[in-house]
Image 1 (cartoon, rainbow, N blue to C red):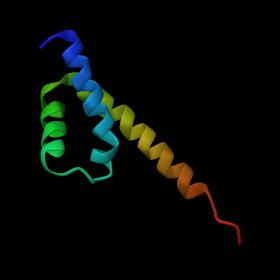
Image 2 (cartoon, one colour; image 1 turned 180 degrees about the vertical axis):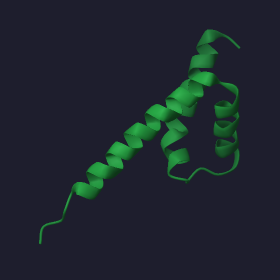
Image 3 (spheres, rainbow, N blue to C red; image 1 turned 120 degrees about the horizontal axis):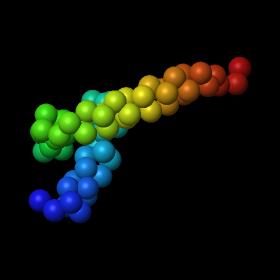
Length: 68
């Protein structure tokens, strides 16, 4: 696999991480993410970054209160 192909795959997998974190991935996408996480050490770093972003976005959304 060339460096460009590897980066393209990483880009694809990183795009799916938010859906992995919220539990909405199924089928081949879920299998692909799980395989990537198990086989690429950089994937775990990307997962950690995505988790931090996901947690921050969730906290920010929960802090927004609708008008009374």
